[in-house]
Image (cartoon, rainbow, N blue to C red):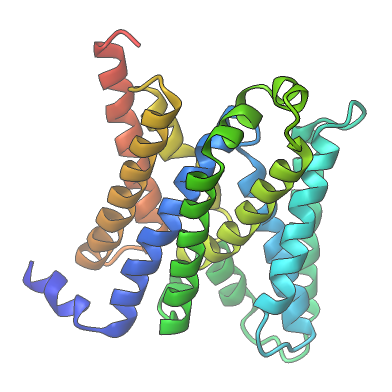
Length: 277
């Protein structure tokens, strides 16, 4: 406890702790929808798109790469949504194609970047997020706070409509709902959350924040509301515990969070089996 208290006295550790909790909360809420809609791997695909966008922004020497990364990732999310509904190119194929292409393009551009003296370090930092967490500022915390309020507000205002769109788009469309508009809203918000989550766990581990809390809660509960609340609780607890354990053990924060989430999934699966679910 003394070691944790000592490290929490540093501002960047407190920033990482708050950002981790806020991003995990947003990712978990959106993760329930994405898993139910069979788009759980969209986080992996969009994180690779964001990686490619970061590489392009780095080559262009932009002072604030989020100005470029956010619109590119949101556009990719909308494209994935549209192509995933196509009969010629299914969702998993579209995600795989865009994901691999963006990852290759990003690595190629980083290697060809002028004055690239530490390509391996830059790539490792972006893919696994360990170093990015150490550079978080108060502005990053405020940005994540605004994003969290936006996601929570979206669910509070459109809960019933999101529920209908998630489970039966044809029924929702027959009732007069603008299904395409709600899907686009979900895709855009997911893209923003994924870009923010890359600073926490990196490009390769973003999907874990989306998938594990949702799957863990689904092993125990059956109602949509209960799954949403439980998923949020698992995500916040996993992020907080993972960051604190990484401080004590001197391990990478992103990987520690994911491993802790995996452990909670194992316990949830065991609890679901004992409950006969």
